[in-house]
Amino acid sequence: MSLRVCNNVYLPIRKSPSHRSEMISQILFGERYNVTEKAGNWLRVTTLFDSFTGWIDGTQALSSEWHSGSSGIITANKVNCEKPDRSIVTLYHGSEILDLDIQTGKFNCQEEEWMLLDNPYEVTSGSETTIVDDAIKFLNTPYLWGGRTMAGIDCSGLTQIVFKMHGIALPRNSSDQSLCGEIIDFIEEALPGDILFFSGEGESISHAGILIREGRILHSSGSVRIDTVDHQGIWNEQQGLYTHRLRIIRRVTK
Image: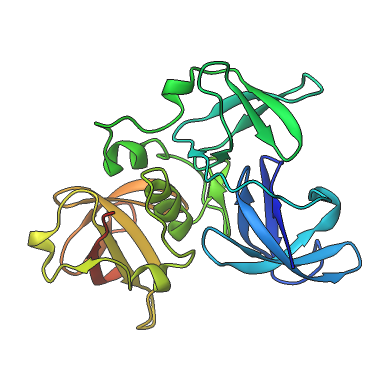
């Protein structure tokens, strides 16, 4: 088993070792992963951040192992960087910048020196920035199954990345996230930043969103949108019906 780091904007994780296989998640820049198996050019990996397992294209991955023990800083905004070849890369929210020199803006990605082009002090969430503040940044992002970025994101990817920006690690899937934190018994007791979990046609948890204020939820469904929510679930005004039934409310803190 070898530990590696993602040096692309993101790496798609697929269900099986084929580009035709569905994307089930993504590894963001700076996130690390263990390689547990190989099949041709494909690598079976398990991520360090959320212990998620799947297949990545080995031609997109670093060939050498990662040895740094640094945990890095987590980006809360889009971040522009210069690679060693002087090309510019824009990193998404939730990426990890490792071994950053706050004075020079230089940081390491494996054995290469990169340069941060933005103000290092504006990379992370400020001390007064709330979960809701960072959740709102994703408004109108298109829905993408397996997505974890502003190019496309699914419901549990949204909750996971927003909380990651605040130093809180959540599992990848909404059903696993629904087991985290303190349970809130009634929606009248819920506070902005609480995570609400829902079911669709069946009984199992299949959807998640973030309460942004009383009676309003931000979630990824078609796109990241704001809808009305009550003790029954999410009310979609355009469709004139409840699209998701409320099951569990959780308050997750450090």
